[in-house]
Length: 167
Image (tube, rainbow, N blue to C red; front, top):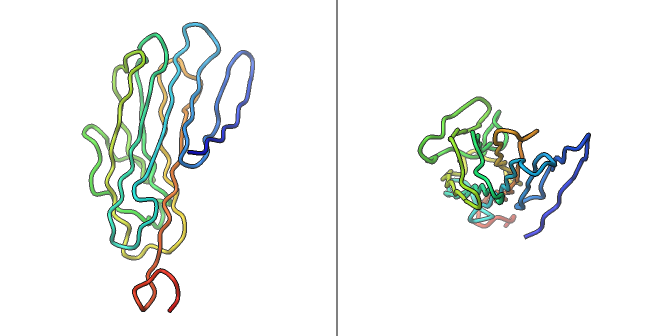
């Protein structure tokens, strides 16, 4: 798994701004009591054709020694204007927001705890071929910004002979 991160330090605050595709991200304030979260997003299979079902797993981890409080976790579908994916099932407690975002709030995540959320989606029958990138992100009380990770899905379009390439 390849991880790429951009780090910005401002006035005693560390923010991890982005994670590489299929990678993880983490961020927190630079203080002994700051909350830290790590986020990962993976898709299976990594390549699919129209009408096929794919699964995204969003992982949120609290590597800190204290519980993370007042968390908000979200999954953002790619391209909400002409969505290449259709939501089949979201985890309990996730509510659909605007622009293809599904979010959930919860009270706490224990120290060293990890929670997994599974989203099942179907590739739209009108999806264009190419790469559709989904984003998972999270934030807890005391954090300066959301931390996020992305997962690309390659959408193959079958040609007239039933293969992804031209016949």
